[in-house]
Every structure is written in structure tokens, then in C-alpha cells.
Image (cartoon, rainbow, N blue to C red; front, top):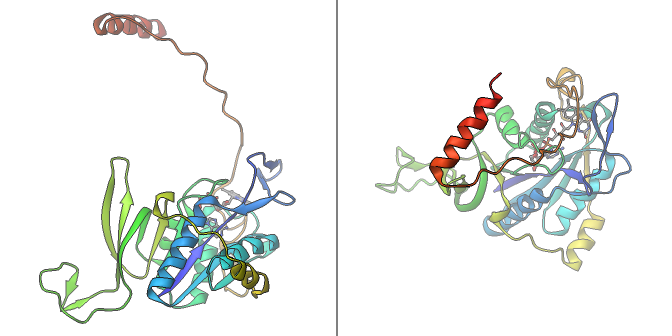
Length: 279
Ligand SMILES: Cc1cc2nc3c(=O)[nH]c(=O)nc-3n(C[C@H](O)[C@H](O)[C@H](O)COP(=O)(O)OP(=O)(O)OC[C@H]3O[C@@H](n4cnc5c(N)ncnc54)[C@H](O)[C@@H]3O)c2cc1C
């Protein structure tokens, strides 16, 4: 089972500065950490590898200092780290980011599962995971809170009565619990697939001393735009279909009015108040 975990380096603080010309975050010189949701993605990748064998690779797109988060992932059991770093990637929006990550995953080659965090604590869009799956044209399940079962190999034994069986061959598949607002739903998709995970899925482990030593010595693979054969028009600011027009802090809502009394009385007061609003 070959697993690819996508992680993002995010600022440790919410007090980030904005570049007034490009309206993008200035990340240089800001203390950084692994995006909190990605710690759960790393843990799930390591658990699957430990259970099913194979390899877990972690990948990040970011500036050279993002190497640190790859080493953190290796310290808790990930086998290999890949850093996508190139000036040409700067200014990427979520489309360009997911395109670039998908190009790198294509270069990695055979993979069964991609694991992403639910969302990044800075950009916060939750679009990159689904974007990668769209670029790779593979199924996606978002907000996964539990992996129920993984069938990493094609099962040639026909299991009569079970669904998802065609001609006596069960496809490589994964069955997960996906969080919804009301509870959860169980979804099964064929592999290769992409999942994004929520914090309910596991408790990330701490690195061991041996793990930290391994991470320190690990050779991180560096890939540029050329290495992953990205189209120049699809990466960085020029390859980004969205532009940040304006960034502002919304003005806080003030007061509000509490209506008190019996239901009928409140309804009448509310109607009166609403009438006053009509010009
Ligand atoms: C027009 C525009 C310009 C931008 N310019 C810049 C810029 O100049 N510099 C800059 O730093 N940001 C820039 N951004 C922000 C950047 O596009 C996003 O930070 C990035 O696409 C990830 O989106 P997100 O933070 O919303 O992640 P989400 O979609 O919320 O992340 C979900 C998951 O995707 C994975 N993931 C997300 N990002 C990465 C990554 N980089 N590597 C690996 N896995 C990842 C992680 O698993 C993460 O948990 C720009 C955004 C826009 C719209």
C-alpha cells in the first residue's frame, strides 16, 4: 500500500502580514509549524503503512524552510519526504497548488491513497485536497473521521451477496466514515483515492528519540517545476485563476436587540420592528 500524505507548513501565529502589492501572506521570517489537521493525516498514513505494509511518503509545496515539516513527519514514522520548491510556484492559489501537488504525485508513480488534512489553518479554504483528486481524476472523500476497512489488493475470491463485486473480483477499495453535520455516513470508494481527515480520526503520536535521529539524517528530495514537468501557465501567480482583490477584517457585529415576553407578544414586536426597517 503506497500512501502519499500532503502537508502544509503554516505560521504559528495568526498575526501574519500581508504583502500590499499581491495581497498574499508574507511567510518569510514567520515561525512555522505543521498545519494542525495535517498531523492527523500523517498519523493515519503511518498507521496504514504499519498495518498493511508498503511506503508512506510526505509531500509539501513551500519555501525551502518547509523542509522542517517533512522532517517532523519522518520523525513519527513517514518513510520519505519530498519538498516542492521553486520561485515559479510563488503566488499559487488553491487551483495552482493542487495542480502542482498532483503533478508531483504523478511523478511519485504508483500510489493507492492520498491523505490530506481537512483544511489549512491559514488559507482555510479546504479546497486543495478535492483539487488534487480532480486533477488526478480519482475519487475523494472529505471529512473522514474513521477508516473502517482497506482492501489494498484486488480480491479474486468472489464473496456472494456483498456489493461492489463485479465478475467475482472485488476492486481495491477503502471504506470510511465521513463526518456530516447530522452525524456520519459510510462511503466506499475504489482505490486509488484521496481522503481529507478531521481531528476525530486519531491521536497523533509523539516522535521517539530514534525517530528524531532518523529525521535529522533523512535525505529530503527536492523537486522544482522542471522536475515534475508542470505547464508554466498552470503554476504560480500567472497560473492562478483567482486573484485576491482585497483583504480586510470584517467590522464586529454590535449589540442586537432582545425581545422579551410571550411568543405571541414577541412575534408582534418583531413584526413592528421589521416594518420600521422597510423604507
Ligand atoms: C490569488 C492567490 C494568491 C496566493 N498567493 C500566495 C502566495 O504568494 N504565497 C502563499 O504562501 N500563499 C498564497 N496563496 C495561498 C495559497 O493558495 C493557499 O495557501 C494554498 O493554495 C493552500 O490553500 P489553503 O491554505 O486554503 O489549504 P486548504 O485547501 O485548506 O488545505 C487542505 C489540505 O491540503 C493540503 N495542502 C494545502 N496546501 C498544501 C501545500 N502547500 N503543500 C502540501 N499540501 C498542502 C494539506 O493536507 C491541507 O490540510 C494565494 C492564494 C490565492 C487565492
